[in-house]
Image (cartoon, rainbow, N blue to C red; front, side, top):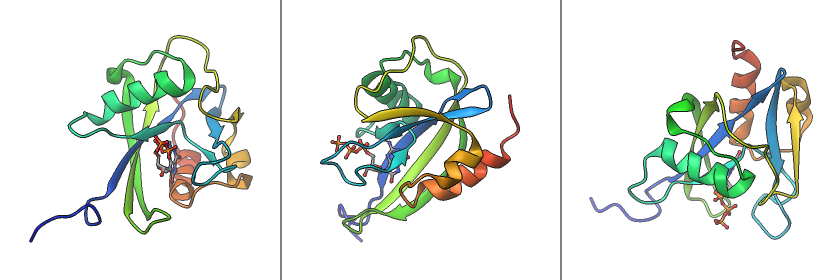
Length: 140
Ligand SMILES: Nc1nc2c([nH]c(=O)n2[C@H]2C[C@H](O)[C@@H](COP(=O)(O)OP(=O)(O)OP(=O)(O)O)O2)c(=O)[nH]1
């Protein structure tokens, strides 16, 4: 069987950045898929790229922070279909530390959210099980 683009999931990495019992979320800007929804910062893994390295690259591009991939611990994953029907596989990492103060270079807004806040936010479907998992995550 030949794999084509539609049978290969879109691999996305995302970061859960903690601060004072809250998690950093960003709002997707106008003009993009899922505009206005709240998401974990992150993005697509480039071909051949190690996922934690992709996350460090995306967090630098989107938040202007420096992250060492060794400080990114896998938390879980979730799957869904994208708007085009292509399967999406999203890997969520807890980011233990970073250098710099996050700035919304790619998002329309940033917010530090409690798990209860998160449950009320509009977000892409694939994020829901991950947010539920974060609510159960032992702190620290
Ligand atoms: N970063 C991130 N992406 C998410 C989340 N939930 C979710 O469905 N996605 C989707 C939206 C996009 O289709 C894909 C992420 O890739 P991306 O952020 O690089 O995509 P994009 O369309 O914003 O960027 P681009 O193609 O312009 O480079 O995963 C989430 O919590 N965080």
